[in-house]
Length: 327
Ligand code: UT7
Image (cartoon, rainbow, N blue to C red; front, side, top):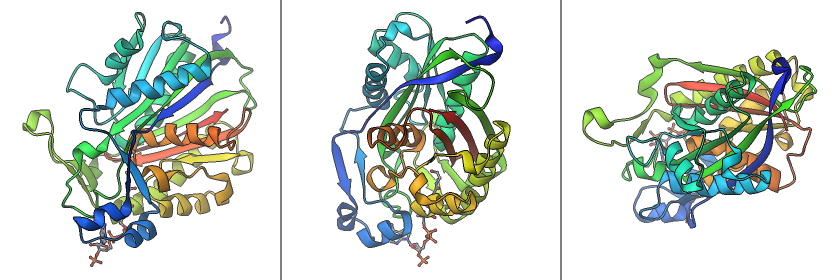
């Protein structure tokens, strides 16, 4: 690659993994004052997957990684780097990314985790794009993997019915582009955070507090920020790529709540038939939700080569952002 100025990080493969155990909304009715109808109507969620006992985030990540490598027709030593977005790494250290590196049998390159909660995958994509465009890596495996079932308060009906476990992965590869928005690959990104909103969504423990903690959320407040900030970040990323709403084939949003997805699509002037929706089957899988939706969207025949895809996400921090990709 000589002309590094026009190098693009192009999607060469995609894959995902969902743990076997499927939990329908109705299961929560046995232990909580809730109902399938409430969960469905307020969030759009119908079921989610939970990791088996002993199954960790890196286990899910490895399965998704293998699927993405197979889709790309590549092996682990074809990779220069692994960037793994998660807030539920197996251990405090080493990173889940280095565990995936070892499990894949990748004996070169480097691997690290990115922690930006539900925005983790857009942060990871943006970082991987920077590694490729600056010539530090030719091929990067970008993973979003979570086991949020491990940080639920099972007595809090306002949160524990919303989250699920899973993993998705993309293989990005350096390819020569023209510098125009017609290029394949990542065309632009926009990242934001505002730590003043930490109390809206957080885990009330961590290594330096001596407990692992559980997730706490002021759902209504997060909802309000989400619609505003997601549409703004998608607009900013599109503008940076020199594109408009009319150019977009697919919005692939973070899958937290169908009402947020619908309201954001409306603000972006996008009909729902241009939005990839998986929230009904996965629940909110935090950093895994976008790569899961990209992989499922491709498998369904929705996302095709050449399509313009806008991903956008928001979560704890608050942290939010968007990435524009020509598939
Ligand atoms: O991924 C990171 C980003 N996270 C999000 O984007 C989540 C954003 N927030 C949301 O998705 C929604 O705010 C929720 C789904 C969490 C809640 O929906 P809502 O329409 O904002 O409901 P609410 O919090 O205003 O609660 C309405 C009522 C409350 O009862 P009262 O106080 O009106 O009597 C809740 O106690 O619903 C009650 N409630 C439930 N009822 C049955 C809360 N959770 C449940 C439940 N089942 N599971």
